[in-house]
Length: 130
Image 1 (cartoon, rainbow, N blue to C red):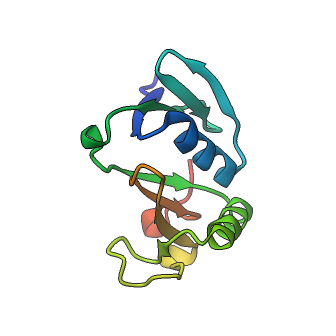
Image 2 (image 1 turned 180 degrees about the horizontal axis):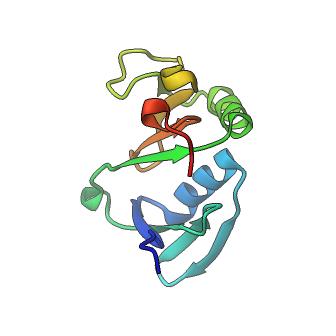
């Protein structure tokens, strides 16, 4: 069997709020609560298992998602409609913009727990998707 990522735990201030934010943004569904986790399944079967933890235990992480042009446009429309602060670059020096790296589109923003989220339509280096 090939090695695959199955799931990862995403620390949150409120597991339902963070799961709903992410799922709504990308047109996904929030799964049922299982113990301390609320899962959101991605199209490749990987789940993000959101878990409520004390705010002091949240170390911001970076999560990057490869999406289609249509998914990007729909998500970006929600980002701007909600007034979500966003940037074209990971350092926050190009606020309110998207990038066009590698011939695609990209944007950075934070989720309700302060994690650094990134949406891209073309993998880094412009390499084709597998």
